[in-house]
Length: 314
Image 1 (cartoon, rainbow, N blue to C red):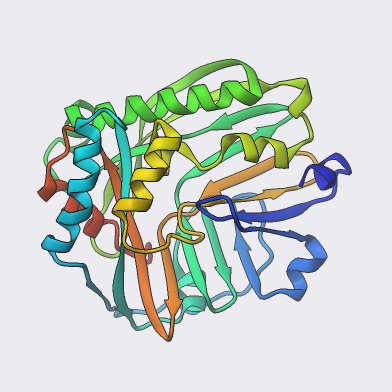
Image 2 (image 1 turned 60 degrees about the vertical axis):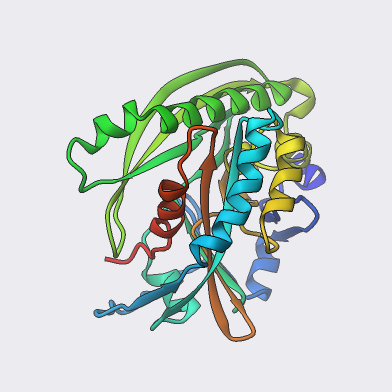
């Protein structure tokens, strides 16, 4: 990645959650591989899918008892001070009357990728953007059902959601400081509206920026190596929290909660791989979860994990 970015060669990359699998494709290689991308400023598809009505999505979440086992491991570690924010996720079997390809074309999201007939995701969350050697990140933490009364005020003032958001902003400010100087928070607790087929959500984001240090300029690989795994879907502090996640979760995240990005030869746009549906032995699974702090309640977290099982088709 460093080599390609120094040569100003455009490429697309995907890195899995534990930073073990890295896939890199130049523009020509994208054509040869069945990989569809639809980002804000780059797409390799112009196919128009006919709208479908009567989309049926059924989910079969794990039982409260099973969820509780992992939740308790996370809570014990939070109480011991081993972590102060842990992103705990689950894998839920789903049934939907659409193919992965139809989900890709019909869903509305800032970032969409279809990887062969293996997985599709429709992510609303930017990881980092690099524009003229300025680096930006937009941590998204905290969601609420938009139908709730005074939803925006409730979200902004919710003690648990606020603690989670402050923690991630602080973590990512520190992370950016490894690769950039003059790091600052430009926008704090911005509220975005997410439209889904089930219920509409409000999500809370902030923007942090800095000026890339000279030794990181035109080195996309070195930047990613320093910043991954992404703090917003891991927690803090990173190394210990990763251990807790690997103990608490009963499945392999794979590319879910990894990152992917498009480098156009000069600038980079990348996203966190969330809102993720994977095909395994002919069955479909939706991976979802949320950040847990010592203020989290079991019922709320279990509900949030289920709320995030949706497709943004409307």
